[in-house]
Image (cartoon, rainbow, N blue to C red; front, side, top):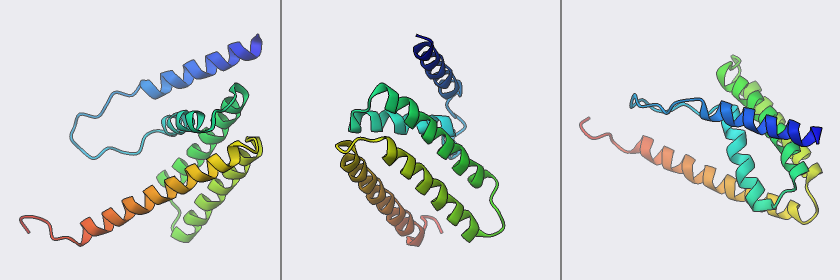
Length: 141
């Protein structure tokens, strides 16, 4: 009972944090969402894709929030060495990935690997589009 109540309070608190920010109407490029919002979004997707149990959802939520907070810290406070930052990002992601794999069942692991591959492909496509836009002449220049 206490565990369920604690989980409900945690989810409500996370929901409050995620929805407390008003949308940006200044017309400026939007910053990355907060770590809590990123983790909540990814958790929702993984919950649907992997058919996670309630216990897995709780554990995964903690892993994703910790990962996203650590990555956000590197993004907002970069060191003077980009290689060090990249190495730190890889280590953070590798550590989170190991923890996620440890809590998944044997049936869920291939689905998770498939989802990760799809995410890599999307990121590569997005990077390619960005490179193409950078090489095209800007109108009016």
